[in-house]
Length: 298
Length: 190
Image (tube, rainbow over all chains, first blue to last red; front, side, top):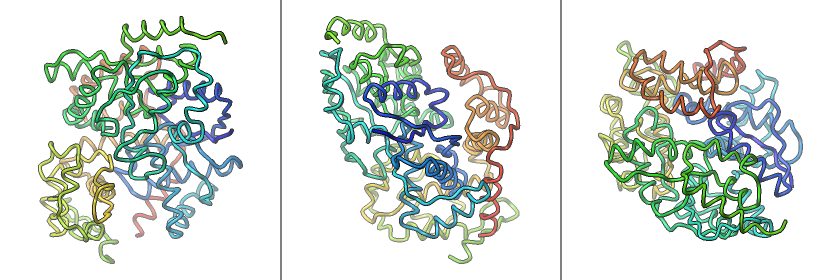
């Protein structure tokens, strides 16, 4: 199995562990990732807040670069914001030939052309639909028995495009989590908003949203995420939230989905760079290392 | 609609009323049911609910719209777009209002304007955003010593993990200059 790979800017910086753990997991699953040559920014949530045309031109540029790579035609994208930006262009040019012409007029300044032939796939789409629990289960070396994991999807991999999951009541992560031996934490916040970039400019609003998510996750050993923005919002402000709302401290572990699955499949902490996460509690780390004892003979 | 495609700035910097026309077209089938307001995770912090905002758009009340923080509080979760019984592109309509505020550099939205503007500046220079440069540019534009302080502890934590490093902003090679310029040119023409 082969995919083109678009890591996006965050995955080279603050979310480097998402990049490395995704690559390690895919390698362990015999999936080849081919990084798009000289890829550029998709515009994140910033382009749309400044110019609609720019918010389409930037992802169009990425898709044009990807098309120039030739086969395969599926692009795997781990970041939900990048995914949505690329998806909007994929869908937009299918419905609107004028938009395709307009984007090509822009791309011509960089000698690029967009045909609109590619399929944009979120990492969770690929994990749940192409690989699934059936690919994980036989490779599990460390059973995560007794772990309760809260799957957090956030918004933009689910909405507005209902591609691989129910945008109101998502479940695509659950079979993957169960395939490791872990239980799924029952909760209501799986597809709710973390406030995204509001954490920087409208902090008190985002803190309120993250507080609701962390509170509903109490009792879970970890929350798993599939987006660098969600991850950062859930992991970096726990102390501030407990203080703001005068609540019991949060010691909530936040992992990227590939880190959890990769650990169960026997990958090392170094492969998954769990040391780079901002919120992994001592209790969780101890429990994680205890699974080593259950490791099956290779 | 034709006039709306040709927005002009008024002297006081308030958007010309016709800039609302394309947004009015997006929400013209609104039945004021309030599903958007009930679905919005940020409605609790808004002065006008999303439903009220669409009403203001229909009435062309640009002063009320651009003295409200409602659209700036949209975090693009797409619940309203998903649930709108008329299938209206409400998140896109919120974004269109943000774009007007950014284009006009309206003072009320200065923080978001500088935040997103700094991000795009870094992307334009280098092709990919440099997270530390972007934040440095943002602090520079805000000209307030308190804003960097708010980010200091997280910044240090991220540096400690080696995820970001201090970057002195530099003009780079203007990696995406040509694309940005072309977009500006097309937008000015339309």
